Length: 221
Ligand SMILES: [Zn+2]
Ligand SMILES: [Zn+2]
Image (tube, rainbow, N blue to C red; front, side, top):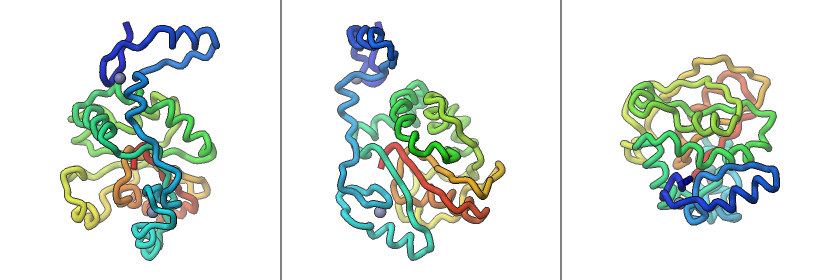
């Protein structure tokens, strides 16, 4: 019997039967209730970073602009309690199978970026050893999305263990390990966007290499 990956409730058979009948086999990984506990970002959001309830360019994005960086970010879901719980299990408890939960949705969302080179946010070597996988490339692999793994993370204190202020202060903690094609468009994909600092550091490295068009994407915001 197939179970929901999140709450272990039995996934109903008729679901699969209908898909079989329609000849579009889309495997379900979570139940309807769990699916509905993830909320999408509403239509009112900052046009640049998807921060909710901002009708115009938000303060953070204005600050980024003053530093010479125009934010081009898109996100799907709110970072609500269910999302926090999901990432806790997926990342910190290292349940790799949970990568499947958002893979199909990510595939659909990234269709509009088909001319972009997709780049996952890297994790440090120590994190990789501890967890065993990179949370973003795992989702991209599950979704069968091609990507270019050009960044690496310098080891150090985990971002999640730092305060917001400390995170904003930290200088560059990524470096390029792969070749950059400056005439291509890039899409950097991360799991959660908070201050934008992490993703903007990677963006900076690509800009320095002469890349003109860089957009960023996250599952949650
Ligand atoms: Zn469930
Ligand atoms: Zn914004």
